[in-house]
Length: 204
Ligand SMILES: C[S@@+](CC[C@H](N)C(=O)[O-])C[C@H]1O[C@@H](n2cnc3c(N)ncnc32)[C@H](O)[C@@H]1O
Image 1 (cartoon, helix red, strand yellow):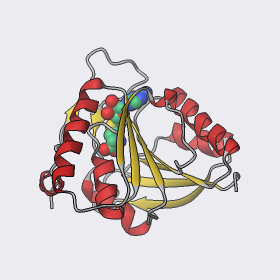
Image 2 (tube, protein in one colour):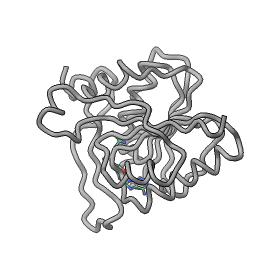
Image 3 (cartoon, helix red, strand yellow):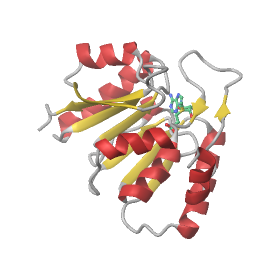
Image 4 (spheres, protein in one colour):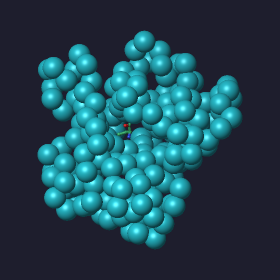
């Protein structure tokens, strides 16, 4: 099934890219994680219904709909662009009309990822290359502050991970590499086509 077909199944519209004309070097463009990559990741890495997922830089919300539909988990999507946030809300209205899933919830917030106040229920944090290493560092600090206040194990999931993100996690934080999931058919041509999952158990 291609991305358009998958979108149709979920009754959402998430394909395409969006460039920022006045783009700061800190904030990257919109492009959704391919569904085929998500299928691969979540074959290997299973979520529990009690998990709370945050997608930092969620765009039109593809990950939220995919995860809610598949695992009935609660997902929060954070997006800085008011336009993409609006499209995510339109997708939510359309998804809800037919969604059979009753567990979990989907919520979108229009704000900067670095300003999002991490909640005690949040324990899985997803990043598809949304912003610079400086912003990533601030977001990870916020996650660790939340863990300090409410002890729990948390995962950071990176798609298309950059060396800067990896070095930052490995050298400056309690996160340790838990798993690598390569996207078959794509990884052979481009070794960025993989997920890395880092876990911090330090809070527990
Ligand atoms: C590569 S897209 C990833 C979309 C989505 N996470 C997915 O995997 O399908 C990155 C998104 O991050 C958003 N973004 C960039 N910097 C941000 C920031 N500081 N706060 C919130 N969103 C941001 C962009 O607008 C874009 O929609």
